[in-house]
Image 1: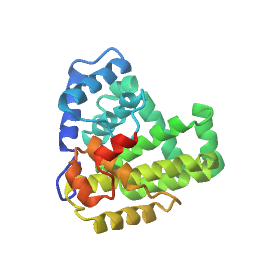
Image 2: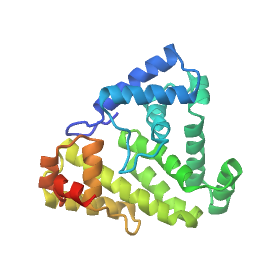
Image 3: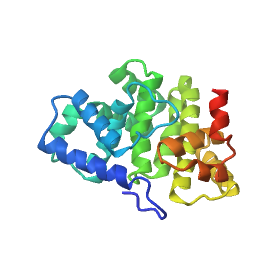
Length: 247
């Protein structure tokens, strides 16, 4: 997992998730809700934040089970041997991935029918959770970027009412990948930052997908623990004192 060069900002996270899989198999919790609390406690103890943007919704740790799912299925290859574990705890993620694959592989009308038969109406939160499974696979190095971006582009074709949701998620993706590149030490100047930001936006091919630097800074600080000093060198942001005064 994550064979790219530079510092690996996911190493500690992935090691923790592998450890949680050991606990999950040897001492399985009674429910998905208990597993969420196990994850929350483990992250808190390790001073890790879930993969996220600026917001911290109440169901954030339930959503973060996607990271545990992805590491177990694609990183450790446990899906066949422990199929009952996946059925008991990761039924949401399995469904989201099944439906995402249908969107990628089926014609527009067929894809929409398959999704609506399984979910009823596709709402914004469920769509974001579906994308999160593929996004997590991608950032952990377990899915090519082309396939993830293909899903992003495909959704507005099948569900045109969700075009704005895809734009928001695209902005998040650009911000996240730029923040990650700063954390890796791959982006050290404002010129390099701007070039990467624009390059990822072009690769996505979704209009208005370029985030502002404040958004990038929020992810870099909260998720990757990048120092404010470094962010001030790379990003066009206000000092934190000014941000607090404006809030």
